[in-house]
Length: 435
Image (cartoon, rainbow, N blue to C red):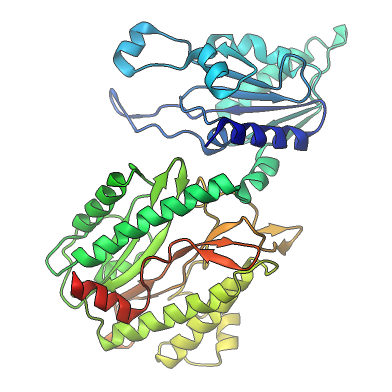
């Protein structure tokens, strides 16, 4: 991502907040895993979106039409002793030269400078309610400004959640973001293809999970967007199964829900395929109903349609399938109204995708499902999960199928970013037989 891209984002946000407003946004902090070992650091998505600054314990401040500059960045100072142990720090000078800050201060100056920056602003935007320490710290600065009211100092009158504006901005992706999302999907797709070729009875779920991570890292995506789900047999009926420890058995299906993270952007793909390379008749029946549901949903994934329409289209197909398979009994319309499908399909058909795998952005506006617009990216992922219970015919028990793609809304319709991984059952079998 170029400095010009970050500058455009900040300018867009500053324009949206209006005059006499200030934005305060902290970076993520390092977190201890155990004793002296930290979890791998991952920058806060909002902070990364506005600054591109990669270090922990920094603060971004934006103030419209400030004569000294609108973008102020607080960060860790250079420290040769710590850098000997932990690596180079950017420091305030680097924040200005490399990341476009108009001013930069060391973190030690934060409590001294923030009341000065807040002073005279009517509206203060920050991530309200996400962290008690953050709320307390911001209110402490506001109280300091209020304490000087007799000298004519004005404190912010309104505190506003930053997400109400920033997350709407993040929802529609720029050309630069779409390019990264395409590449992330392509890397993940190639890894999924490798898993289909590799899979055979006797391998373990974690062998496929390890192969996926390796293939993504080899292609330049060293991090995953979320813990991979590799669910053989009945494990596929557990939506977020991440144990990935069992042996893959001959005659079972395996559901793989996995995606890499590239330059801070997620991919998200799910495919379900036979461990031995051949669907059984019962498996194929379930699979084809899920595939039909996804195809119906994709037809509604076009500009001007509302967010809920792909889900409703998939739900109609899946409920009809459950009736024809003898799992549900009755009129599909009434069954949908009664939510009789929920024991077998309990989630929505998709979610926004971007810097977070479940990305930000409202699904409804003013009480109505929002319309799809070019630049929006989301998943389309219907599924059927048939538990081992008496209500399910014996031949279908323990079968779980989900098919998930990443979809970009375009001016003309949509683009499936993950389409390189086959979904047609015959194409899957052919790929797996070639090995």
